[in-house]
Amino acid sequence: MNKISKLGRRPLLAALSLAGLMALPFGALAQSPIVIKFSHVVADQTPKGQAAIKFKELAEKKLPGKVQVQVFPNSQLFGDGKEMEALLLGDVQMIAPSLSKFDRYTKKVQLFDLPFLFDDMEAVDRFQASANGQALLKSMTNRGLLGLAYWHNGMKQLSTDKDQLKRPEDVKGLKFRIQSSDVLEAQFRALGANPQKMAFSEVYQALQTGVVDGQENTWSNIFSQKFYEVQKTIAETNHGVIDYMVVTNAKWWDGLPA
Image 1 (tube, helix red, strand yellow):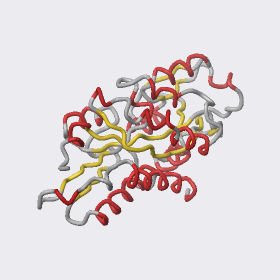
Image 2 (spheres, one colour):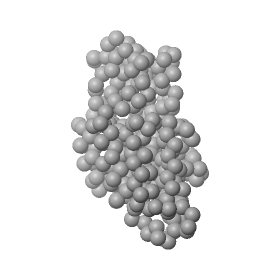
Image 3 (tube, rainbow, N blue to C red):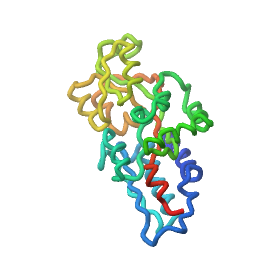
Image 4 (cartoon, one colour):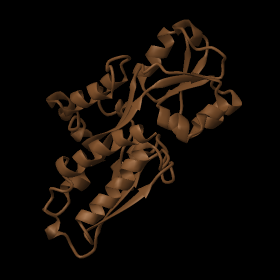
């Protein structure tokens, strides 16, 4: 698990030094600190959870008395179906949704849902650091969202409550929980599976009660959410990637004192 968590810390540091927050001239801020509510849907011990905690630590250390970061993990404030709306309404200031969650705002980010596009996380790194990858961070400003950085989670694996998951035909007819992505839905339908779009917080119970037969996720999410308790088989497929984009409300960001 230490190796997985490390993947989340490196882009965090890039977010702090390059994405803009630490570069802002905060000396002009008022006496009261700027409060940044950071909402996310996973546990503290996951890569995203650890990155959010580290962000709070570094932001408050570098800007003492000027910024207060409040982190709300595990869908405490908003689930993954509501957090984008909450950001646009100003109820939170930062979120880090899975890249699969942005299809309502831009189709460009859907490329991350394509199967076997990246061989490993190093390949993901290279693309995200490229001009094309960086351009995606600003692809939703017309919809009120500004991307600040990418954070890693890892490569996706398949799990099921069945005894065998060795060949593509083994998923035929099975119900798989997926994120709210039409690209992911098309993939599972092409394999003859029955994809079910579902909020992350509902997955464990759905697996436990048989509402779905399986799911796709990273090792860190499988571990932190204890999906292994209600699944018989996990296949290490590395068939896709789950990464996050740290986003803020573009209007709120532009309104910070210069």
